[in-house]
Length: 179
Image (tube, rainbow, N blue to C red; front, side, top):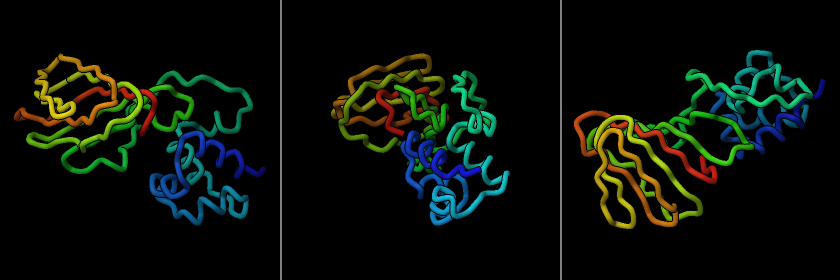
């Protein structure tokens, strides 16, 4: 069975380059290219790793029936390439190319700041699950404490600074998807 074309469509639907898919599944870009061109066949374990990154299962991948996925267990979360030791951004629903929003869990260590996101299209909503933060919108500062929410049009430069003594955790939803 040739699976390359279907994998390529699924990768593109998830807005991933071959290099990004390769990095997230611990493979080489060349091998991903070979698989997509049906010049190489992945082992079952490798295919499962690729499909996990793409947010699907072998059963769903080989099924012609489009089944709506409802549950996304903690184990399938992925960190975005922007994540580092001070700020981690976990994709809560990785690989869902058909979604209209990006829900992520952002963890910020004390004294650290997220990257300064330039103005872009869309809207953003955040719910502060833990900690204390300052939200910087176009150089205007808003203080939030645990349980507070923010909501803004993303047409402003924005970043978040953890002003507390513990790791801040934010459930953050962006629309349209950017991760």
